[in-house]
Length: 117
Image 1 (cartoon, one colour):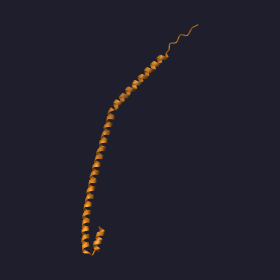
Image 2 (cartoon, helix red, strand yellow; image 1 turned 120 degrees about the vertical axis):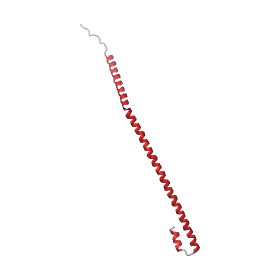
Image 3 (cartoon, helix red, strand yellow; image 1 turned 60 degrees about the vertical axis):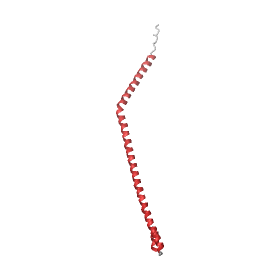
Image 4 (cartoon, helix red, strand yellow; image 1 turned 60 degrees about the horizontal axis):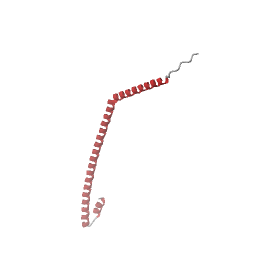
């Protein structure tokens, strides 16, 4: 644009001067349209960015809610888990006692009385 303005200031021929003026006008119109498109692009870009931020924020909230549900479920089932653990522990203790009883009965072999002379 600056080159066109310099050329206009230096030009002496009226026909060329008229053509340069037309070119300057055309260039100004092109620049206006281009800047309008750029601002439209920026506006669209900002809208898309805003929508992505909202989606990401909603996704974070959904994940937080799911994790809270899972944690609540674990906390609510904790007494059940403890009672299952107690039952399993008592079953293991009973099995050990039965095994000890069985092995102690197997090792007790009746002995013959010693001969008395």
